[in-house]
Amino acid sequence: MITLKILFWVLLFIIVYTYVGYGILLFLIIKIRRFFKIGNKVKTNALYEPEVTLFIAAYNEKDYVEAKMKNTLELEYPKEKLNIVWVTDGSDDGTPHLLKGYPNTTVYHLDERNGKIGAMNRGMAFVKTPIVIFSDANTNLGKESIRRIVNLFGNPKVGCVSGEKRIVNKESDVASGAGEGLYWKYESALKKWDAELYSVVGAAGELFAIRTELYRHVEKDTLLDDFIISLRVAQDGYTIQYDPEAYAIETASANVKEELKRKIRISAGGIQSIVRLRSLLNVFKYGTLSFQYISHRVLRWSLTPLCLVLLIPILFTLAIHDRLFTFTLYPILFWLQLLFYASALLGWFLENKETRIKILFIPYYFFIMNLSVVLGFFRYLKKSQSVNWERAKRAQ
View 1 (cartoon, one colour):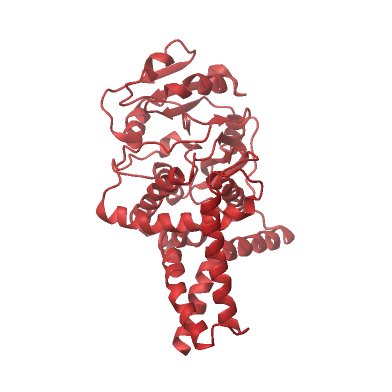
View 2 (tube, rainbow, N blue to C red):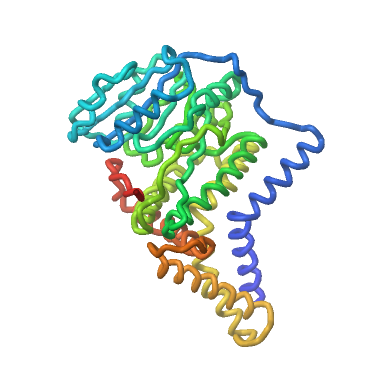
């Protein structure tokens, strides 16, 4: 029983560290560094104003073209220095035709569909500006987003800049919307602290930018193009910085089924990324970057979901040994665990119900997140996740 107790505490430590402990540790490190004025805050350069390319890889996005272009043309950056490039491989809904006539906009179309990364690899051959900014067709950018991203590139050590993904919050959000919104708020805080410590570990595909010269051809079966591209920039010795005021805004997934579909793909891509970026696990070579990468990403996509599964029978066994209905440590922890999963079940029941008690959706979203990792792991092993992925349906 001693061995089981030790295993329980090890598993619990990994789980708590992954979702809460790393954030607390990061916050304390940042506070200490600020106190002793050991800062890593990257200074922006408002005078740095190069020509840039806004790069949008799209597949059948006719419903978003008008709103995206209206938003793009209103961005605060010199129009003569902003090149707009759409790569519409495989689109057969009229998207390329709708884009004709917009100013300073170039469309590279190919009838054959090779997935988003295929479009990116092909389209990058046409980019001649020093900075390229990637964005999705179904997201709108904050008016100052490009300006703020470019300012960070004024520092030569910065190779990539990630914007913030913001989820539209509504009073009647379903479980997916409430959970996703809260999750991204927490992620935003972690990214700010990561950047201040050394580097963000991965960029949000909705809005991120790199120095064009640092782009490397990405394997055609890559699932998380944004993650692979940005981390390879970091591997080359540059930092990934983050500005929460450079943001892309979109609605949440239409429902939990759509969110689960999206998360499974991300999880399969996460496992693939760990394999392809395995050299980043070498803390002796990459130091702080490896520490951040393992703590913030690797544990979430690998060990921690397994720990959650193992914790259920182990804690039940310990609770039975200490008598299930007594007020001792392991029985109490078992009932708290049961309460948590019961709350997740309640979240499932309340999915798509109008409610303002969004806290009830946190356990459900947490469960969905970890379930998706397990399902994504098996999908990766079976090689059944296509790069020609259909975008998850979004709420209206």
